[in-house]
Amino acid sequence: PFEATAEHGYKHAGRSEFDGVIGSFKEELSKAAESTLDHYPGLKPCIFFSGGADSELLLRTYLDIGANPEVYIVRYEND
Image (cartoon, rainbow, N blue to C red; front, side):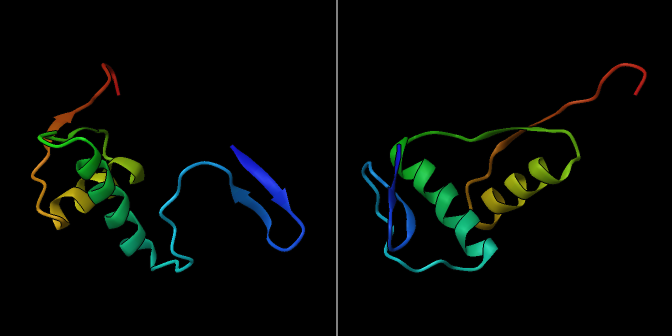
């Protein structure tokens, strides 16, 4: 849920821990991955790896933070 404000355009109306500082793309990816693991203690991330940009970014980010995810390679027949 977002609400419009005259000063900033939009602000998140729900619970948020945003401190007003936006890091680099890599820093933000790491914060998001760490936040996911913090919210679900004991979770072992699983990534369905297609070789595309999205799954590669997820895999590299989890490896960078030491999460050691389970990886499943996805390949379609006749691809």
